[in-house]
Every structure is written in structure tokens, then in C-alpha cells.
Figure 1 (cartoon, helix red, strand yellow):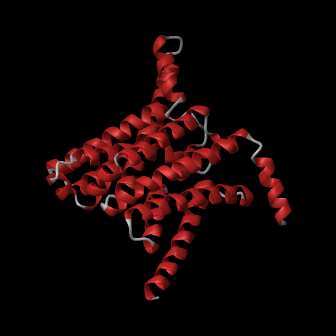
Figure 2: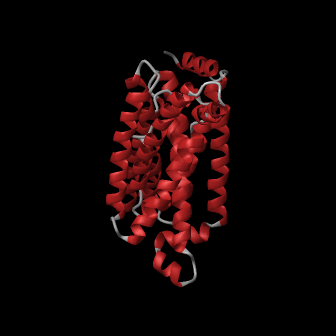
Figure 3: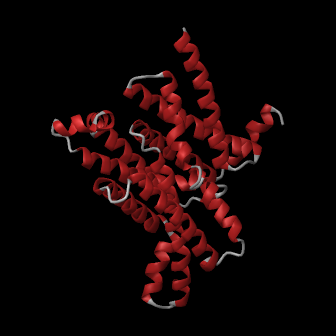
Length: 302
């Protein structure tokens, strides 16, 4: 395929609204993930993205149960209410995931169960329960394909509704607003929570805010790369930026640029190569990380 052929193919595909929605949502999700990824990596909380993504998978499977209940209650007022949650799954998945994120922080503070242990329990438990529920209650004839799509995001990004797109836009505005309005507080809490608390900053409140926003972004990111690959959106851009830059502001800016460009290249590459969107984006980010690591090594020696 020549360059002209590839260009013609891209132009043709980008005439379709679903591809336009996928590109807009992909860029916005990547931006939010990278902004949140920097403080999470620096605080050694990057694992929370992987754990909460499994919780979101378990919550997503509940829509299959609600769908069966709605069918059983056909013709009633309850069916209409359930149908809203079945059609707009984020209304169900996002509150549950955010609630779990808040509970995880509470478990860590009380030290009844260590934070990493409680996260592992919820992660594995949600993943197993989610698959069991989907296997028993899914109305689809191809459960394996549905599970694969949810875990790896193979087709979800190309089936986004207008509601999903608006959710991405709203969450992007929220994340950017949080970083702009509370930049200094986030900076202080990220590097030294004890000192920030001593100076009057409510470190716990800002940690909770970061966790809740992260949970919401993770739910959105499931459409882009699937629940098993979400950590790549959070971790890779931040780690790549840290190979070259040292200041917090520079790392955040670089991570945002790297994440947005990697997602855009990944989506375009998946169209040209007919590969899964999520996996393609992750591979692009992996390549960028390797390149930045090489540049960082050369820079440190020089």
C-alpha cells in the first residue's frame, strides 16, 4: 500500500462519525490518563489503575443482569428505569468504581487490610465475579468475543455513543480543572504528604479527589484499551517523560503530549493495519518509552 493509498483510506474512514468520535474520545482519555498518571506513579499508586479497571469490569457485567431483569419486567415502569442503565452503562459502572476507590483509601487508612492486599482482593474478585455473571446472564451468543472486547477494547472505541463522547468531554474538563485549580496542592501532596499536612493542606482530601477522578477516567478508558491494558495509559506516558525531564511541570506536560500523540498514532495505525485499537496504542507507547529511555541514557552520559 502506497502513501497515497493510505492517505485516501484515512480520509475515507474519517468521514464516518464513529471514527471521528473514536479519535476525539481517544485523545481526551489519553490526556486525562497522562495527567493523573504522573502523581500516581510518583506516589507509587500506579497499581490502582489496574485494580480499579478490574472492578469496573465486574461492575460492567452487572448490566447483563439488569438487562435480564428488564426483560422479565417488560411493560412495567421499572423496565424503563433499568433500560436507562443498560443502555448507558457508565451510569452504573462509574459510581461503583468511584465508590470502591473511596473505600480502598479508607481501608488503607484504617490498616485493617493493607492497601495493596485489599486492592488485589477486589481486583481478582471483581474479575472472577464479572466473568461468571457475564457467562450466566449475557444475552449475546458469543460470550468469549464480548469478554475479549471488554478486556482488550478491541471494538468498543468504534461503537461509542454520543452519550459516551460527552462523558469523555465532561471528564476531560473536570480533570483539567482539577489540575489547574489545585496544581500546587497536588504537587505538595505528591512529593511530601506529611509536610503538606503539617502546613495545613488536607492531604487526605486531595488523595481522595485524585482517586475518585482516576476511577472515573478508568471507566472511560475501558472503551479505548480495555480493562486489562488501562495501566499502560496511566504508567507509560509518565515513565517516558521521566526518562528525560526532572521537574514536575515538565514531566506532566511531556506526558500529556506523548499520551495524546501515541493515542492518535495508535488509532490511525489500527485503521491502516486493521489491528485492535487498544493493543496498537499500547505498542506505540511502549516504543515511545524505549526511545525516550535511550535518549535519557545518552543525555545522562553526556
